[in-house]
Image (spheres, rainbow, N blue to C red):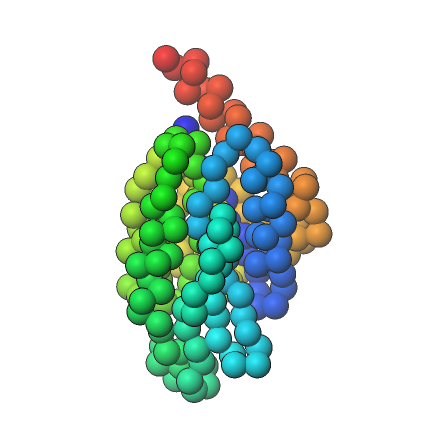
Length: 183
């Protein structure tokens, strides 16, 4: 399968992760194997966990320790979560039919931290990737990693995950058909 990149872009609290969860649920019913995680915010502790999309295993990723203007030290990163999240993506059972899912790529990754290495590695594979990012980070992410996205989903798309999943599958099926014709 040819490399396809799908991006979910929106501001904080616009529903990126909820939309991603809906896409995961719909795409899990397809022939594609989904690997990765989404983030869950605990508003009481102002911390973020990552959740394995296949097993629902959960691990603390980061906790806010100061105001956002102290970036990047406004979060304390749980370094032991990085290899766990990496393992979740590396457990491929169906090479070539895998969709990698990462929530969220942004400031930290642009500065060589948290998922930077994992994201860079996944982008070098031939498998499909779906990731979320804040709109303000989108141009830098596209430029930094030289990404040519198939589709960028914006907040206007978040109300219709069924349509979005159909669009993703259409693109992937088109790529499969193109590859078969080349052989």
